[in-house]
Image (cartoon, rainbow, N blue to C red; front, side, top):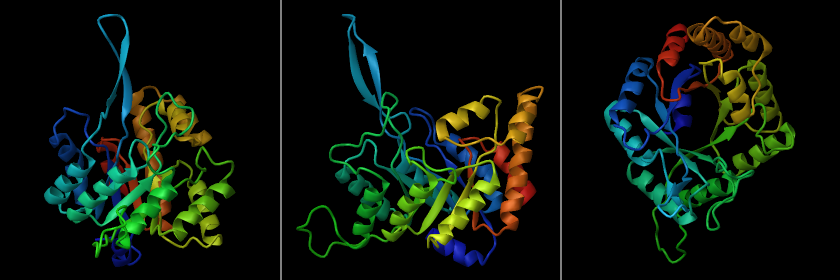
Length: 318
């Protein structure tokens, strides 16, 4: 079922959803199941599954030189989607990224997803490689999230890369994109970022899931600006409870977001990490209560593979 249909059927009731990471290579899928199971009592209609690009490692050789090898530390997104749909009877929302994938590989992945009966995808550009100062796309890949969205939309029209295909079956994906209440780090300003987002909506995006934020005003202002610019599709807020003292500097560095002074001050004064986690949970509960009271369509949680904090927040909010 499409996310926009889940939202419409909820008839104004705020839904609960969350995102999971594929397990590290060599780990068992039951670790995923164990992370999902405690959250199923809150009846999530869908679960996001992230996609991770390749990494390059330098392997030392006997002669003292190094060989560069390519690896994916978290493979298995498509298979995990199928597994959780089968086990938990919920919709899976795989993330699709530009980085590390050719257009043909993307098309093949979309065919697999279509055959599995997956109705939703979230399209993203993806992150830079660690040694890159800016995003470098594959020579034969999509250059950005807009191009990736357009590829999915063409397949929704039955248009594949092979122009000679006759009577090709059209896919029917509900396409989501990311939104950045505090702007994407590559955008010169928020106005330019929203202008770029508007192009994605015109190209066929049906819902927006935001980057995490810790100040609800950033989300409310973002939504108001989007509406003013004619973006009228659902905007789903992304929530992550602060979990460690280190995160007050790590999260702004990695995700280019602000930590409110009140939250940062409270965390810095906490006597230990357990107290930090409690502060993070209480802050997220207040965030979610305000967002729910404002009628957001979904509260979407970034669990980072750990469900305990999200469970406590959901118990207090739903």
